[in-house]
Image 1 (cartoon, chains in turn purple, cyan):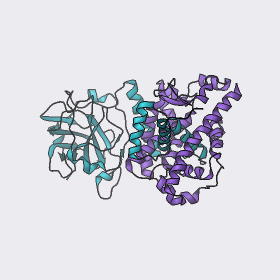
Image 2 (cartoon, helix red, strand yellow):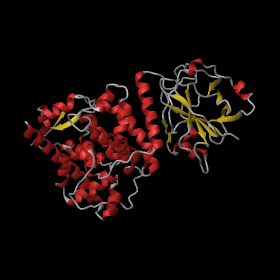
Image 3 (cartoon, chains in turn red, blue):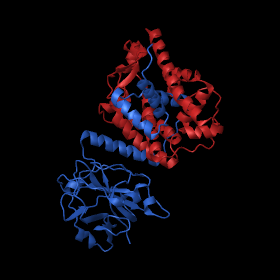
Image 4 (cartoon, chains in turn green, purple):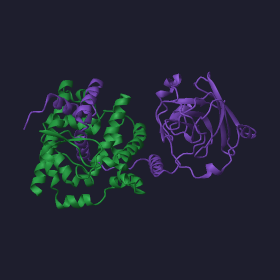
Amino acid sequence: MTTLTIHPGCSRNRIRDNTRVVRGRRTLRQRERVSELTLLQRVASGEPGAVQDTLDRYSGLVWSIARRLSPTRTDAEDAVQEVFVSLWKSADRFDPSTAQESTFVAMIARRRLIDRLRRSGRRPDTQGVELADDLAPAETSSSGEYATSDESKIVAHAFTQLSDEQQRVLRLAIQHGQSHSQIAESTGIPLGTVKTHARRGMIKLKSLVVEARGMEMEASV
Amino acid sequence: MSTPTPDMSRYEELLAARAIGDIDAPEAQDLERLQAALGEDESFDEIAAAIDLALTDEPHEAPPANVMAQLRAAARSFESERTGEPVVAKIGGDAPATGLGSLGWLAAAACLLLALLAWIPLGSSSEGDASPSFAQVAEAPAALTVGLSADLAGEQPIGQLVWDAETQRGVMRFEGLAVNDPGVEQYQLWIFDASRESFSESPLEIRHPVDGGVFDIGEDGVVEVPIDAKVPVGQPVLFAVTIEPPGGVVVSDRSRIAAVGIPG
């Protein structure tokens, strides 16, 4: 069952699956984590220098996403500033008890970049994506702080539980910003099937992540 | 576990589609309708972001130096605005509340790429410095006089501009530029400087014009507005006045251009 709740600290309602109600019982580590202000909370509180600090910490991440989700390098250069302004304005919506800060930053960046793609009607160049990627399913990897986080492990594990084709389609859509048409063309999967894999895959992924988070929480109390 | 309602199933499908960037116009409208009824839900966007981070196996390369410089400037501007310190000089007069009408010829410029430019917050000098008049700048030996028009073809004259490269001072003189409500939108001048960025066919290819200041038109008739270039201008090849949100912008989408002048 899905319930609509007002999430503290957020300016918008978020739909939370009731399996996440166990969030109310935080582990000690989580309590410690939220007892200190995160960078985005410092931005939201108006702390001098915090806005500049976001550039030191996240400019590489945002640039990486912008490069992948922009049609050209020039577009990416134009987009990063738009992303950061949006991030600074949205800082008060970040809730460290529900997501890692880097995930929130990536989410803001992705939404802004996807909006730009939709407005322009263009997509990132797809040439070489299929060849460059190892599309063999299930071997997810990442670098940096995020790779070692619990959240990364949960999400990566959930991803491996999708079907091979769902993984393939979602990888091309999420990581490379490809449209369903581009994916159909590059993979040979019929367009309708691509759409089904993408949407059902995402819904299943969310369900798996919610379930895994709930289990993790229950195990930790 | 109860079965999701049809609306909720549809909502989830559309949220999933949005998160991976593949939602068409009718679906977007449907999503908007459902959002109004059910509230915003970013959970799929969060999942997509988390997957993106988990899948991407590459070190995060730093943005190019020019992009970082622009980001730093934008951050300074953002912080200044939030603390209430002036970010831009109000170099025009106070204006009564009148909105700007749309300008028909904007379509020609609307397809141009975004312009990014470094933003340098102003110091306090604008209050104390006496601004030269149009006539004073025009007297300078090497003063450049440029006609301003509401269209790129130069068929709708709307004023003149004088620019003295030696003193880096200039003045715009408008007659007929619409009075603006500073609480709604303001004018902003951009100076396209060929000494900073080259172009092949049109000066409009220059992506990083120099910010020439934000100003208001507060009265009908002839209005003089000093130019407030934030950085030295070497070779101006185009002057353009855009209509922007209050305070001006760091990045103009050039979608609303009020005046343009090309040195002869």
